[in-house]
Image (cartoon, helix red, strand yellow):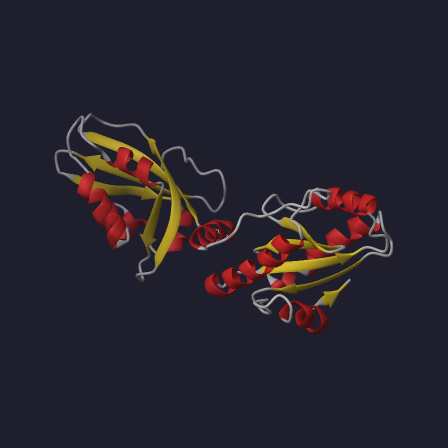
Length: 270
């Protein structure tokens, strides 16, 4: 393969050739990550039509606009606009990916070569899609703490519970109770938390309880981020406690009843 455009081990890269004489778009190479994902060997993909590994609706969208002319609408123009595709594995599974396409060295104007960089949809991508599909009110912020207020935090717990159930994704929600829940102490702990979690995680509050959402966290390793979080908090407040549970395993669909029950019955404590 030519110099790869992959930057991460999980990046999927496929090289294609649009031949305007033969009116074809063929696969010339693919990296190991893509071969593994689609359950193909290199020899099975090389020389195969690119459209063979696309879901039918994406294939139709591309073929509807593709022109095999020197100055026509080529595959690069179409994929640049689409940005997303569903790849089809050897066993027929559809795998949604985000894509970017880059021109490569071409033998002539009639033969155009490209490399496609694809990345699988992750938990955060699915969550963004889920939010767009929901009738969800705009979040309101606690003016003092500058995080989600009680109403928004409760709504987020319910929304994430529904998301976890629909997409079979994990989200750990943690409840931090400080021994000193004054405004000053809460503000300082919130600043500590912002430096201790990922940009995709969230912080809210229900009353004087600080709520942390660790999105995409598997239940078997939840103790790791939670231990790190509470150890950071206890450097400031030695009497702070933390309870947490997984929203996929124990969804909260009724905030008044479910949240109390899950906090009492299912939560792990630190």
